[in-house]
Image 1 (tube, rainbow, N blue to C red):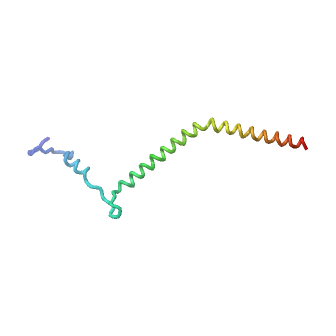
Image 2: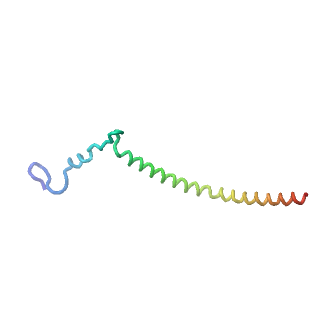
Length: 93
């Protein structure tokens, strides 16, 4: 409903009031001259980097699984060959 003067009545704020609220300057830290939003953006970037690192670690683990299996096989072969070598050395003495 409109009152005289073209203003709305009711509980909703005017568009002008909403934009004024958004344009308020942030409180600045007197020592650094920066707003408190810097800490929030740093926390957000840290969370994103942790998420990225976790996703990267998971993908690398998945890709390295066949390589790790092959490495385990080669280590077992190496141990067997060492045992055979020791056995042959004992036979030569």
